[in-house]
Image (spheres, rainbow, N blue to C red):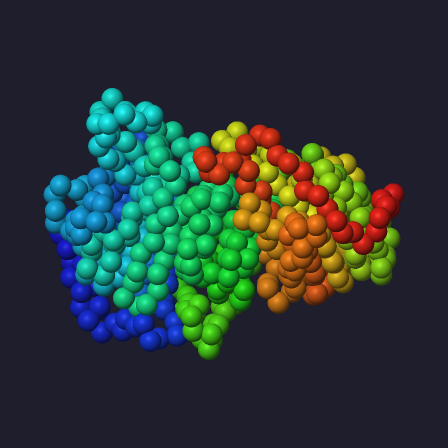
Length: 521
């Protein structure tokens, strides 16, 4: 306790000279934390929580954080069910600092926000009294609900926002709210933020509702389980930010051995400012100068790319998408400057035009093959929810058979780059409505997305027979020999009542195709 008091006192001296961002500034300063929590089976939950809190305080007190206006920590980095804390409702205007009605994690973080004069966004396991009225949600025997919650403290330590995760990914002992809450908060530097958590990204509510309500800056806390070929951490973060043209502050739990990593700050159509996918667990604060959306003159200070080679990234565990249900065709093992194909499934047709060079390795080196693919159907997200996916894609395969696709070679160092893609053009027509959300999607062999200046993505709406459609083109314009996937990827939201898709979907009527018949490989 004495040590913590000394640290806070030192921080108070530092903060006096700090310059806060103001509403008139073109930018604000954000910090996102990639965090690997300490957990030992031999230690009690309260001991683990105390250690994690100590590391949080060290990061908040660090010199790297001095310039930061708002600082974000990841999902499930701090505490557990056994150490859940009460959190005051924002409407109560309470600063929990030194208020012993609340557990130490909430008290101490409130104090740190006040001392360091920073907005803090912290994900934690929250507890709350079960309501006395009839409620379908199961109440624990101790009369408490538990929520996976983002808590926002302002510069004076007040709780100004509290978002409880709605779309759970199998969290045991965690409740949800009766409906998805659209949570936002204002700051003294002129930016209004919305926030949601991890699996929420895959659904319409609350994530896309925030965008429709005009929110331009999003805070995303996550313990993401990366999946090839479309849903690795930074890959989907950048794509979501790009399509919605919002500033996106993502803070990821760092556990590569179980597939969790992915932290970054993204400036909408301008792409990443800073981003990382780690191959080993790490604790690090990434600081970025974020251009305000309403300041078009704001400069973009993109930081040098943080990228590890495929051999290093082989220690990052990656799940595999259910692509066996896709309609696919092998790409020919021969150079072709004008390869064209139309491929259809369930009335969705995708048009492919490629210019590529194929060089057969002279030795017995292994090399990735590629498949063109279309899918318009249902998948399960590990059994926790079902969703409808609609996509046009090209992705890598470790062999000739479909089951080898979306997998990596065990020895990446022994892999030759046999394919050089000079250009790829994907084109399709999709329904144009709020029920369909589509985005440009790509990832390379280092499990990082392509930079935004390496592709062109366009959408054009048109009306035919009183129905509105969306014509989408996604084009690779920079040659790549290390491509893993390149796609138009999207979700169709069928059942809006519960935030997840129903099992029955209607097919998309496609009215346009480059080629009217299949080209057989």
